Amino acid sequence: MSTVRGTFDSALLESEERRALRTAVGDLARRYGRDYFTATVRAGKQTDELWQEAGRLGYLGVNLPEEYGGGGGGLAELSIVLEELGAAGCPLLLMVVSPAICGTVIARFGTEEQKQRWLPGMADGSLRMAFGITEPDAGSNSHRITTTARRDEATGGWLLTGRKVFISGVDTADATLIVGRTEDARTGKLKPCLFIVDRQTPGFEYRQIEMELAAPEKQFQLFLDDVALPAEALVGDEDAGLLQLFAGLNPERVMTAAFSIGMGRYALGKAVEYAGGRQVWGTPIGAHQAIAHPLAQAHIELELARLMMQKAAFLYDAGDDMGAGEAANMAKYAAAEAGAKAVDQAVHTLGGNGLTAEYGLGSLLTASRVGRIAPVSREMILNFVSHHTLGLPKSY
Image (cartoon, rainbow, N blue to C red; front, top):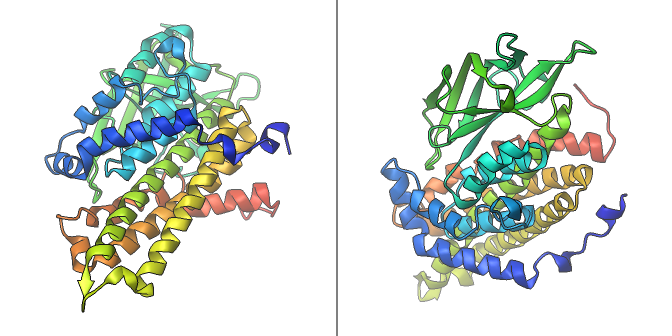
């Protein structure tokens, strides 16, 4: 066990500054609330007002370096922002992608020009970036990605060809950080590389996927056929391989945990309020253990998931990428299960009212499954833990 991993201390997780951030974000989110969120989604619009105000107040860029307009914090602070937005009924999925994945990768590996171009806008909410990794035939196996980039001898740039699927928010993002593969000159094998592709780039085509998911962020397929990119579109070192990719995937898992925990907290709060006020034969239904105990269990499991999420964020912010990888996967798994269970129990507590538009819980039944499916399935996380943590052999 490394020194960093051994110094984890839960007493450090909620400093006075972080508690103040949690309170301030919660106050902002409640001013908008679930009614704003659902009305925006039903109208087919984006939650631009909330996004832009969160950016102006410094919440979107709280994890980005101060010299580029950010707050100078880390993943711990950004996860607080997303959790509190979700707890008020406004889970912003694009926060997982733009400031967490893309912002982190560019801050760690981008050129000075890339940092100046993108980070200040991500921090203040004026720029957004999507993340393109998933492919129809690769799934969770990043080693099977077939999107390839080859040198354009005529221009010194790159030609990018491939297809992506289930890419969030491409229509509103100013650019997409695409995971492709280039050929290693020494071995001839393909290695992952990251490219910033502006939405207006010729040949960059995207088509919306119709989903049964009520969210402002839409899902898209991407089609790239010899898309010409300048040399400066490459992020980081061409030979860095998986290092740069996983620098974005660990924050993705931590933020997905925050997404699920916030959603679960919102649903649980609605259920507790209803169970305390709804009376049958003169007694609040929350007085019955059949109602009270499942809600208490949901609360316990959400709190436990949050602790693992905080541990993962702590390790990542401390620079322990290996330790953070293990904790981030566990946090994502625990939070997704706890969030989905809390939503399901909340709907069950309200009975028929749990499926009405008035209470706003029915749509969360679908949304809460996002954390169990994406960005990696719970089964693949169990594979990771069984192989990397327990040392069991692989079946594939």
